[in-house]
Length: 298
Image (cartoon, rainbow, N blue to C red):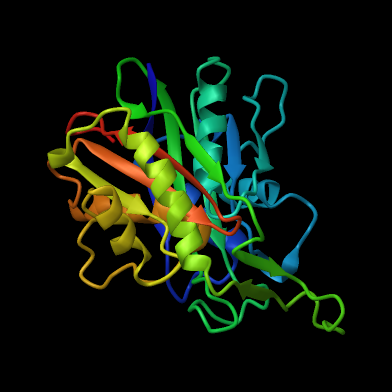
């Protein structure tokens, strides 16, 4: 028995400034692609980090759930839906998949929706800058439990010792009246090397579960322009050929966004297994294998 991606949604572009609106739109697109009613989703998990106006409360997951129109009816016999945030940087989506899998195997709900996305708190642009390296984007994965071996394998994680490689925070000593629209992101000089090391570690562990290299591809975080290629070379797993697309770091949305684009463009035709590797900050990393269902399904 396994947990599979039934449908996906993704938003990337100038129309997607709000992390809430972007994630909600991605969620609605995933539901539409699966021809699934909003009330069929029992749980929504939000893994996004950087959000509109640095909001702390309420949980972003609750706002996204409302904007996506999920579980808004409260009559006695209506299905129940709830949502929560699970924030662990670039690794958050894979952590959320692990939690979703634990929920789905209980049979307490038939569908779990994992969403993620980031935006600059000032809501003034979608492209990365020297001060804020993350592009605005959102993605969604609609997950279901199925019989058979397809779907997500075990999640492998690693947290390296030592100081953090990347940290984002609101500098309360200097923010003045701009605290809701400001964000400071600091990257250590050796961040790429240290993040790559932990990514290789977890990627190798996931591959040890057994795959056919000829039908396996890599989808991974891209905290720096050359990161994906370096990880691919070290693991011996080809990355998808994006022809210059997907060059920006879309942080928490990377896995759902890349998987969505790969499915929609046919880049996964003939592929049996996807190695998903998320890495950043800590430095920490998470990786798992995703065995694609037979053609005609997701």
